[in-house]
Length: 623
Image 1 (cartoon, rainbow, N blue to C red):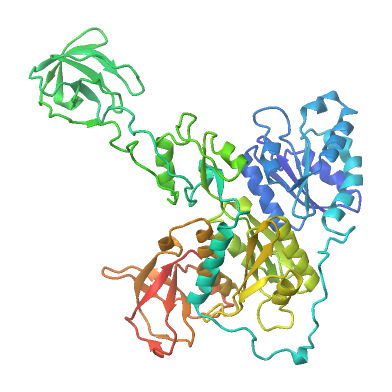
Image 2 (image 1 turned 60 degrees about the vertical axis):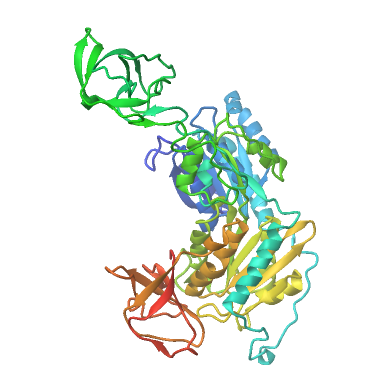
């Protein structure tokens, strides 16, 4: 059993940490346990979450054990960081650990033990005291092995009760041509969007969620929002003096001072002025501000101005920001607006994240309705929960033996998907093997997590171990909508929907296993589907498209082809240099290095090649 130990501390380093290494030593004395890693992270919620999810996603450990950050102080945030990420919580084990500690000291009552699981990994949060490893060693050694075995399904068979044996086909008798019709990109896209609409219109689908402002980027507003005026009062644009513009007096008495943040409003009469700072409120009677540079000091006290001389007479409205001139309360941020960073700033400036906003929200979930009223939160269309996993006996993670091909597809899928969906809603299940039992287990785990979208790579071509289509259709009753698309790369792209009783349907994208095919088909099919579910406007479902000029001749393919390229700007028209990526094989991941364009090339029925200087369509992408 492999254990990763994380010490949570602002003050400890690998040289000064005592508790983590002591846990490692005591556990490894028992041959049941081996230590994968010893890590240290700061007492910061975001950093703790990031490291934990990184270990869950990429480590082959069975247990992730943290120590530190469980006390009562403001810097002790380990439970706050980890509790929202747990799928299951084992409170009886928490009580057992606490009771064991009480036998040694009553100060254990100040520690907050936490035990749970994420996927098949056990999560144990313990105090950072150097005495803890000795006190808790016996309990951990007794309970953890059984917990790990249960999470791995080694003690109990949790296969679906509806499972049935797949029809065995002799490899010599398998079809030599695909039995599935091939469809165009447009047809495939129309089918996907139709099923996306069915998903979000399903009565069981939760439409709206309340997100904190730090997680709202690229999400879509679910309600019309009306802000307060910005500025909320008449404000000075410059440091100077608020005056009456029709007052012809050259000498003005300074009767008051308004600094930024002051709320008082002074009276103003002819022959008078009020000294103001940039951003300060302007007296009601004032209709102009004279900048300091256009005045001269006439008289003063020891530490204050008394009279000034106006050197340049002001014009009405000069250097005043009127109430609502930046953003009016009559402005409506419409339902369906994408939340860019600049828009989120406007929403914050407009008071829409504060306690005092006037709007209340009623969503289709009581929890989200309550949460949307909290400061810092607003209702947006719910982002889907997305499961990803790869398939194949030949692939492994980065730390596998050299004979194994490193699985890059999950890395790329996660990077692309987390550009649209917050990290905690992209769930990496790892690598399924080329067997019916393994595929059933992986799909069932994704369904148990109530994922709305499942994205797999590999297992959908003509090989004898390509078992995804029969597994989903025969074991789960999924509906196959298409299994071949007329494009290059990505011809075996496959799409299913799976109906569930009392729950919304699940969209399943099974992409080819070649790395470049995954990159291209995710950009063409999966990401637009996610944007559709998020309610993006139809004009923004795809990356921005531009016209580019080819620098070199390109030979055409019988299928529409999407080639990786890099853009090079000239004085006239953007020019895409395709010569950089001479190897366009779908297995060649190196061809994506530095690529920022997908060239959209027509099929070769129209022409056998495109000469240098040809103008073609291209998508901006991030590979």
